[in-house]
Length: 495
Image 1 (cartoon, one colour):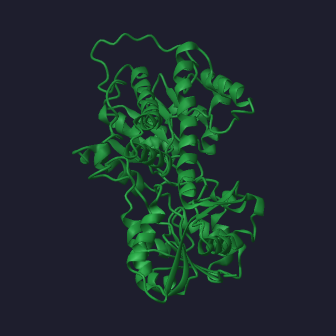
Image 2: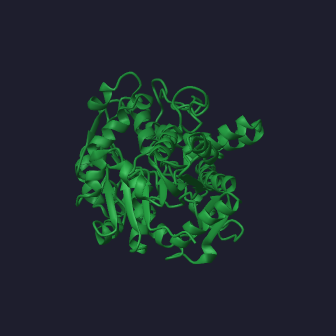
Image 3: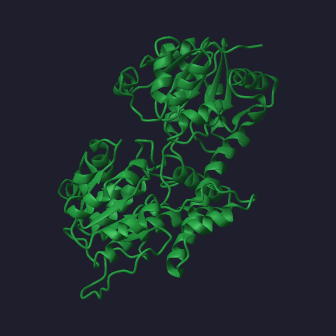
């Protein structure tokens, strides 16, 4: 029986870094080397300040770094000595050519496959860890077969990750399931068993699922699509609640108690973000269109459209409440990461809400406890957000390190990320420093328990999926906001 003693992981990002750190922690007899072409990222992994923030990750890395966990830029050496190679590189949505805006760009996957076959000898197991479209493993195998050597035997597996940012370490140590897909040949089953043996160090056998490669790849896409669908579904109900006087939290609790539905992912908000949900749903849409299943593609496209609608609807609500204009007005935006307990901003709803407000000339003062200023400026300066005028970011955006400073003299406070610290701010102090009437727009429902207190202080509260206060009477004398819900999304998902 083949035993894995050395693992190489290509890609030191949000998947490769935490995953291999936990494997090294749970399997002290296995040497794990994480490699990346990005020297600054590898230096960060070898420093006291890791390149990503995850609760508990620092302790895991410190417990085994330098013992059986290593971070390096020497990619070829790590591949040569490894028994198992994880491919954990980025698979972004294509921004050009066929499938633009929907299909996954597999150039980094292909580059890894070519490098592996070039420097390898003997028997190796190559495992997809990145989220990839269905049949990507077949593409890797074709590259291997076309460049094979007499001394080389490469087996390809699919082992998608199901971790969630913010709880990644817990998800890796106590997974709901581990999914491993491979060929149904004797050689393929041998490779599957070798990888199962690694996970069985800490994962019960009953939670390790083995399938063929295609089922494994599709399961990952389908899982993320179903989760995104639930968020869009409850967000659609939140719009209905605001128009009828219902409370989306009460509705979510009522339907979530039905065991057939369950309560998870029924939290209304300003929309989902992160590196996976939008990318994977769009990938699924593209796959359905390529397989001539337009009705299925249209169904899943609606999940993305509803997410974009929710973001735009929230921004329009801010403008509407601020007397139909935010031009030149200071707005405090609290939270920029796509969710709490992570510094990841990829596809964060904060980016799009900032874009809509900047389009109206608002002056944004942004605070986030974990996102760096440089990252915020970079996200807001991308062409899809700032158009052909990136200069406006420096004119309209100020990034602060103090939430109270962000709120000082502001017309409104907008909560875009559900950081726990926002529940404990001194709102009396904030209200005293804001312009009156002082507005709070709670896009994450983190202040529900404080509504009576906030109203007594004098705040005008607007929240997702609920009517909290009667709005101040206002009859617009001029035009309406340039943003309308009927406009197409700023970042088109369809080709």
